Length: 335
Length: 201
Image 1 (cartoon, rainbow over the protein chains, first blue to last red):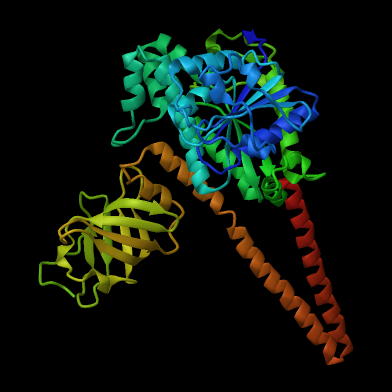
Image 2 (image 1 turned 135 degrees about the vertical axis):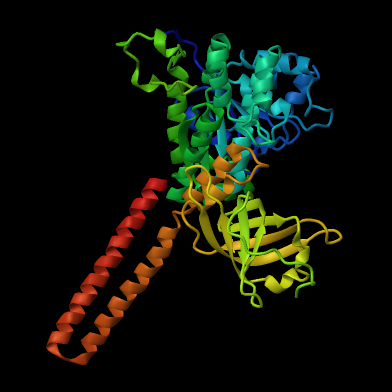
């Protein structure tokens, strides 16, 4: 059993649907982490629709990602804006005036390379809505992935669509040269379903006998696709069931095991804070939403520190191996 | 109502997995037509039929009771679902497939799953997502029960008040008992509400 000791510094917050509170949750998580004494940098990754700075009360950012992408600024670090919140730096998104919403491959690589070197313990990347390749690539690049959604049916649908798109994007890139797997993934649907990408389990089942080597590699890839679920604007106990729905569908059809990271309660005070352009966590002494975010921040720190147990085929694992309780795993292929 | 074209005869089974049965007021035998599921929502089904022309005026059948008959297959038994026709639409020149919107009436528990199995134009995962979503949505049925609970408690309190007004000692005692039971009921509900709120926070 191998263990990677690397800390997760970069976390992305995505979810597919607009208006579910991605930017607000990113901001709230940043504030919670800073209260824990962490140095945090928030990046507005919503290229073309940036407004994280507005939520932080910054109306006229003097520098943003666009300046970095078009090389007006050489280092990403130089685009950090200090904010009223102690311990939080902000990198504002671009406005798409010069095509920044569609950075080139070289621009993306330059950006991602420098994100890793930012002077912070945690970097939170607030992604835009939708499932564009840029959004999915940024999401997949981050070691820590959070999918956010609300209990609304449309949000649930988009969240699942987002996870599926991100996973298929990852698999498409990773197995670009393996025609067999690509064909199985996209055509290996269940019989009678014309429009089906099929269950990944059926692909795994097929490979298990046909090509054990590829089976092991695909299983490892799925295991590496670690993701966390957060439900926002929770109003009732029934809303708390929503992450379980997503997790269950992901397990059954995508063969991945997202973890439920927590929930954020609906808080009417947040809307008032947004209108006043005050960072909402600072708006109220005791916010229902912040209580949930504080819990998620604690979990995030814990997950960042915990070494991730790497997957190993079951038959090779020693029987009496002493695993940390938090790292008990279920084999992604279900076998 | 009918255009004079031949009506399909009542049949008991066939190769088609799904039939729609509509009682025809004029005929002794009901109409039995093969249909295909187009859409499914909680409590509603949209079916299409490719040969709707034997009935000239489908509007006449709006709000008419009907039965969806799902043929058994393998070890699954057949299933009968009572429904009402909510709407009908024929697009184009009237030779296109007819769409019928049906509202299911007290469908059997397995109806949603069995009907979704008949839909072939959607991937299994999306079906799985909505099945699970519908299961969660069943939770509010509890609040419907709570409405009945409130009415019952209110009834107890009112009955207690009326008994107090009768003047009889024994009736007054009974009135106090009803008040006590009603108050305990309200107290229990208040405690449960606070507990639920704490969970969601």
